[in-house]
Length: 106
Ligand SMILES: [Zn+2]
Image (cartoon, rainbow, N blue to C red; front, side, top):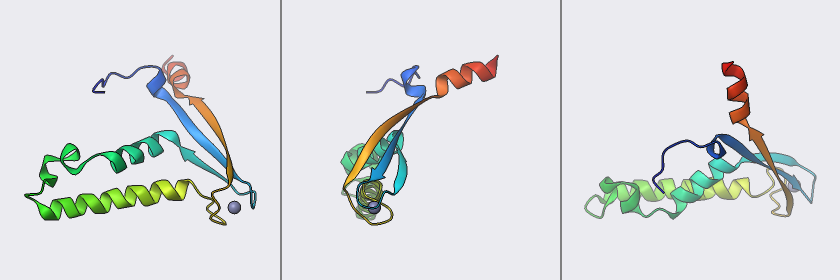
């Protein structure tokens, strides 16, 4: 997917609202952020950067650290920040930033 043209859909902000079933803690997470982290987690070193090939072991090590950080971030979003439980209810909230932009430009 190399289409860089912004569509109406791309301008929508989707947020997950999560409620812990154990302690009732509520937290939010942006879908875009999670998608970006998932992508970072799945990309191979050479796809992400030509600099990070096996000829540059230190770059690969740096890449692996970034990948681990992405994994840790992603995991922390999928558990309760208060009690650490992964037993939560998830609701998807969509903000129509496209509509807001249209209004503010008038
Ligand atoms: Zn909790």
